[in-house]
Amino acid sequence: MVSKKMQDALNAHVTSELYSANLYLAMSAYCDAKAYKGFGRWLRVQYFEELDHSHKMLDYLVSRGGTAAVGAVKAPPRTFGSILDLFQAVLDHERDVSQSIDELYRTAAAEKDTAAQVFLQWFVSEQVEEEANVQEIVDKLKLIGDKSSAALYLDKEYGKRQRAAG
Ligand SMILES: [Fe+2]
Ligand SMILES: [Fe+2]
Image (tube, rainbow, N blue to C red; front, side, top):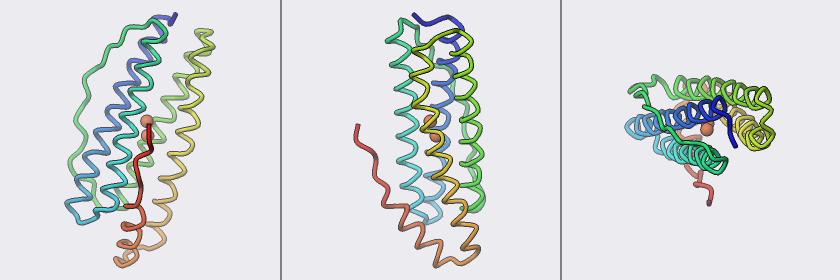
């Protein structure tokens, strides 16, 4: 069984993953409109990953006898500045999400919920990977500065991202 406190925390995080999904969907459309179709595709894949995260957490909650309560998702911004500004915003957002996952983990520990701690380890590792991936994009964009040909090369490379199976 899952405690009320753990259930509330997991439900809140499901809503937060849905916000991440919508944020990346909005960013994807913004990139597409700026002719950065590759980054647009990369962000669209990320959108699906965030949806997967929300489903994974919801499925876990239900499997532990919890009650799902999907909350309202606030609207993401509509504009994101330069492509570097946009990916810096992705990095800042993922750092916030990592803190939120850490908080969930601490709640699981405080509730003496071993199953939740084991379950949340996947999310802790996923956040390490996501932060590293986005940090790399930010670093590369900083490196190329205002060289548009290099930006278009990166756009093409990151556009090769495929949605993971499952
Ligand atoms: Fe996520
Ligand atoms: Fe994420």
